[in-house]
Image (cartoon, rainbow over all chains, first blue to last red; front, side, top):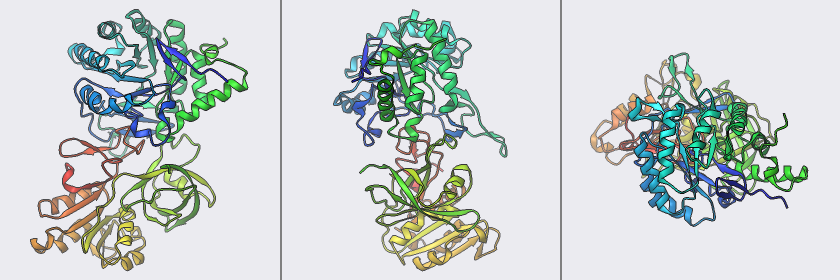
Length: 303
Length: 254
């Protein structure tokens, strides 16, 4: 018997595999494919305090070993989530992490407060890769000072484990992680998608209506692993690593680099049972290597 | 019964250089698809192409699912080169289906859009007034089969190489819009490129026709999670994979 349990800033996960926000809906979409109670945690589709329509189509395009998306954070809003989606999740023996965002600090705080009060949400993941309406549309997560203000405000608004999801579109992601830690975040998750573009050379238009989009999938994995390693050196708080994880081997790379848990995103689209296969693949790895506890491999990179 | 399964290739038939029919045999039990529904298909273990591709069901029997597609990019090229006995990953049947027609009905296909309507006219044999259009004669496939399954078949080509010259939407609308009373309650089913469906809407909107269109968009998950495949509905975005691919024409903002 190997022990797969990990602790993410006070949140005890039965295994280190969680779903990446926006790739797994609110759980029910994938419940026909496997028993979702087997997940370390579910991270639900990103929520804003008020519902959002999202970007016009086309919203996604495939690129080499990856995909660009510009969904535009379409979501049902916190209130509808609590009323229509959370009751189902409450019936499950499953850690629920609510991903949320806002376009102002006030909106972040309102969402965090409502999700904390709702009951049945076990952790919050804040997406800071969105622009700040009141500060000239600077993306919260790309400016240390802007980020400091929003994380500090949200920290005061919730006593749930708070995970800050870092943007890779920065010069020094270790520095951004340190800012999150200093502002009271319990954990960081990384990486969010990398901003990219893909052009139709015949029409000379972007293949996305939004022009730019977020790149995910195996194409970004080496960058993500490197960033997890950098953040691991910069902070003490736990890391949820993600970026193109398709298999248990991929997931283990992240853990060796310093992640205490991993998030599986794009892989769900290709193989709706990917997370289950990754969990059992991790178990097999530990058995083969005679390791009793998964925590032994976290940050075990030899340099 | 899981909608995610492996299937064995039992036939790969090239109709010409561009069109292919793929027959697959699901391993284990599977749900019976309804006309208009679709499947996500992928030849296994490859990150480029990364995502599954959506294909309308073309025909189905108890143990075989068939897909008719146009070879256009890498994914369809790979599928068209598979061998009998190869195994692929499949998710389906997915999405909405064509509502059951009342009496005789009209089907309008543009190009490879014929794939999704074939299943409908086969199920309701001898009842379709079928309008089938393409750019050229070479792009019209399975014409004899379609003729035998339809009450009446009108072929339309843009280059006038076969049948009526011009656009299939005009040929169809000119034929059915003779009197308003003819149109009341008439069921029209259409599948083809977006400009074609848009033109059909322009000709038929507000005339009391029950028109159903099958739409296509780039898709990642196929099960309603990623919100990547939306189209503009009247009040909100609608997912082609979940609320669609078959929509009532008046649900869509053209």
